[in-house]
Image (tube, rainbow, N blue to C red; front, side, top):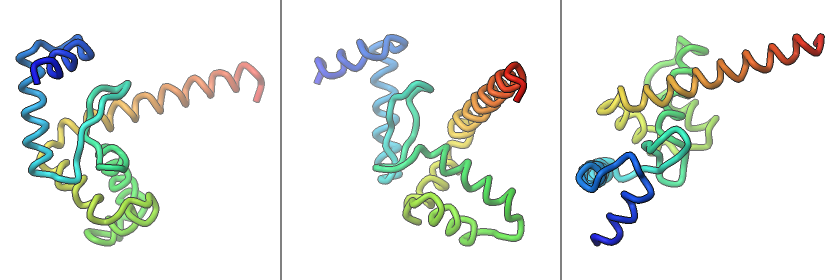
Length: 134
């Protein structure tokens, strides 16, 4: 076990042995509490993800988008639209919502970063189109 933990620390240079242990124990406890949630590394960092599905922040973003686009919808109607349009089974959508309920700052942080990156990409594309006279 120590060798595997050391390998994890080597792959995550921002962690010490102690902080890696704390992170992994915390994640294991969260997975136990939310069995449809797992954790995965990526360019934006380690994040909560639905098992075999999208990141939790993506589901929460979809829920917010549906609420903005269809303010008359509420509760299960919103979740049903997200499940149908994303192809994510309803229990997984509910799991993402439950996880967000307990860890909103973590999930919202990823959502905020994604929005900022999208805005930057859009602005760069618009500058390029302007230069091309389009």
